[in-house]
Image (cartoon, rainbow, N blue to C red; front, side, top):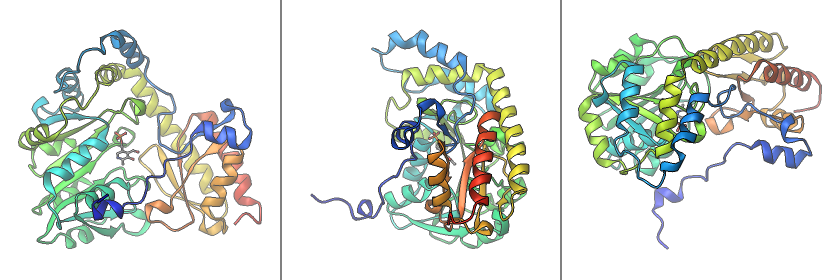
Length: 366
Ligand SMILES: Cc1ncc(COP(=O)(O)O)c(C=O)c1O
């Protein structure tokens, strides 16, 4: 069997632990376990999205609309970008892959500020490109000078995740414009943008070399439905339509996403819950001796445990035992002291904080 060499080099994907797995392993009731590891919506799915799934369930014998026309029209109203400049995908993951497929030839380079979402590197490698990593500045802020310096003749793509996973930091419009001024395509991943105060999506009306990715998995509470979208110049969208698989967003997911966009109250409540929870956790975590928490504009917080001497893997394991799932961040090209926690409901946040405080204070856990 001749597997392509660059596929062989890709490490297997290690998914986060599920609630079921943790409950089974530690003899806990499923209802006792809380998951703060995948940045999902703490309020769950919007009622209007669920109603749409029920309403259209019996229509699944038919193929879905290959162009997701109705959904794209709703997205267009939501983001204020023309429908011709929008494409829907099976999660924003799919649009990411399509962008790489569209622009990256073998041996060409993609600039990736790190630490960030691991899929960018994986896709670049899969399509035989070369990832060029640029460390974020001190305290994980974006520094556009360093990024621009890495743009060379062979660079085709620059990935910018804003708010960035796992740091929560955002890029300013000024820095983004400066990067866009170079002759490369910028993929701006705004998966968490609803939790921030500013989006740069409108810049697709001005720059032909910008693709903005958005998702229904976070603020819209539909991670399991797998719906995301890209906004870009009409020419790029036309090419993506040519290369995507015909029926990439299934019928029920298209309907669910339309329902989610119409459930304005759920979106408002989700954003409010996250912003309040984020403020509470940031304030309380920073009071703990040796703990550094970075300012975040997303629905998660990155915590540095180095000052406590406790390694994140150990703390994450001890939290599992107490029914709390968080994410240790060594796969993000960070050292062993970083833990990421999603913002949950007020009750979940308090439960996490109490157990976490107890664990990092107690000696002998490292
Ligand atoms: C930065 C970032 N982009 C994209 C995604 C994937 O989103 P989707 O569920 O739309 O594929 C994630 C998921 O965690 C993410 O963190």
